[in-house]
Length: 309
Image 1 (cartoon, rainbow, N blue to C red):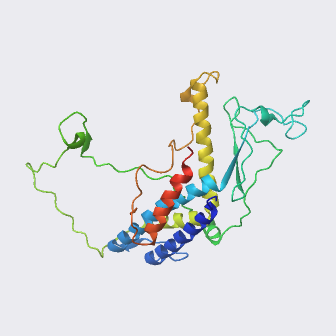
Image 2 (cartoon, rainbow, N blue to C red):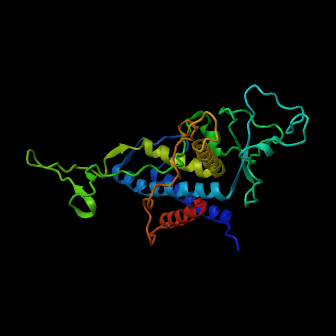
Image 3 (cartoon, rainbow, N blue to C red):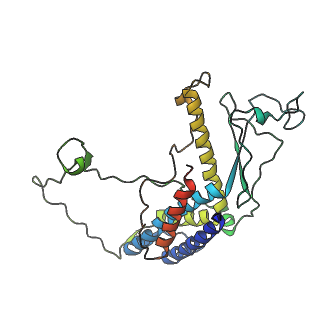
């Protein structure tokens, strides 16, 4: 029996939407008003919920991009070339030009969702051209939501689809071969020439800047409100990344005349996957709350969905 990925995405999406609604209530964000200041203790509480929710949302987008989105690659025409008289056919022949393409995509397999994303491939000369006019792009039918209409006259925060890099301690140096546990040396703070560093006095009721926190909450809410668009973004990046890897191998083998592996156009960001190594923050073997359960399930399913082996 095949796993129902669409049902898994919907179930975790409902859980994340409930968590986002809780964040809006905790932060006091109301329609038409922006959040500027929050008490320090309340900001820390919101951040402890928001950060795991963001990591869970990225893994939910990865699940939808891998299992519910079909990417169709089309060969673009070189610059200055006129389209044939019969769309999709070369003049004088009855063959489809995509059949002679080096990396013509096979027919996509049917999936649970009908969402299809068209990716325009690069021309043989390395420039991006226009897609063939024989098959128009297939896009999901979705009207603008209330959040989209409200943000037409305001800045619209974008949700980051890639996990931020881990912050490594600056006092930890890898000196393999030297004495020390696990080949590491810990540099301690030397307080011979000065006093100890004072402990900062932080009042939990002190008002702190919360504008960045408010933008992160709004970006998460908008991303979950339009999950299909976020999944299409990640699916296009994944297709461009696979195409770049293929062209690098061909250039390294000398099959692309006049092009080196370093000259291949690479997608941004240049990362192998959107997840950072290790477990996401807030992950627990035995979750204590709903966000922990959603994060654990999304992390496990996203790794399984992204695995192409």
